[in-house]
Length: 436
View 1 (cartoon, helix red, strand yellow):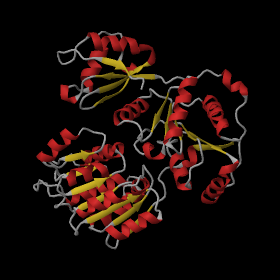
View 2 (cartoon, helix red, strand yellow):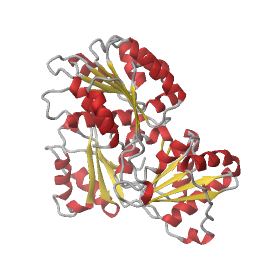
View 3 (tube, one colour):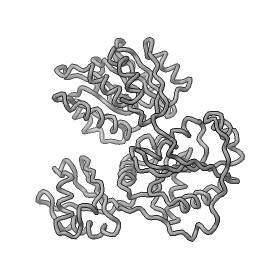
View 4 (cartoon, helix red, strand yellow):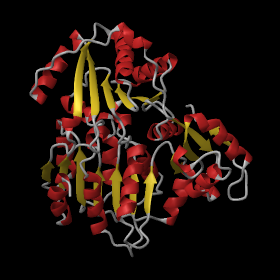
């Protein structure tokens, strides 16, 4: 067990209210999921647990984890209710019923207000990534949802940071909670950190290019503090020839989903993201993180840096900072108990370096689970004519209405023709290269 599981699980299983503070990757999802399953009466086909998450991506991850842990228990129904997804199928699923609901505050609130969702039988209420939810302005929605839950219930609140607002919320919704705080389970010893001084915003983009060209990452996340800056930086990097895309809250859900698939598939080398959007990224192969600006909060900086160097790999973390950010740098020095020394930016010669392209390209197939497609069908179709071998195919993801498959860059046109001209499940499917 991870530290947070070892400390929190006995309290959760004893029925206590628990506040768990730990970073992404600390194992908190399994801790509260086991608590939910422990409290569940499978024969009672009512919603008995609700997990509220800040983003759809995180909600999807949590639902997958719960389903994995629930495999040994017969017929458990886990339903996700998130904004950005069609309302019709959710209404249909609610009519059929569920044991566990995982979703985002706005959509859950909407279903409650319309009388489509009942929380009368809820015995476990979970707030995941509570700090981000309050940052995103969901406090009123959370209070609305809680009004529909029974007063007697177990409350589990998990958060990477613990600001005063969380304390106030906890005091309002919890009964004598036990607090479990663990340091990040992520080992930063394999991460090399560099700090670069820039004069102003106009120099940041130039500095970012130099850093990427020097380090040649296979997969990098560039963190920006605003959605507008995030989009602008990504657009500029794409203009320069990098395989880049933006991930932020102003994108349509389908575009966010495709961007995450491309990054996981190694079809992007640079992902430019805001902190909130990055909570949905579950990728181990990130070898570089760049802070385009110093984070407002030192804990957020540590969280960003922890995105690289995972699973025993080496990682690089680079931060751009200006004189105007000196107060944030001072806070970071105090928090990390270090003295920050700056490194000189790479020289002009670095622009002679060839840009490293993403090794794979993602193919989108207009058919998924509803068309009875499975990963094996796609793999079989691509390798049938022997022009493509199995080891030249990367990740395959099948969703309800579409499927995504990563192909080595040099073979993408062959793959496109093979799928478009061939058949799967006795029928033709349209396919296209995913560039956005």
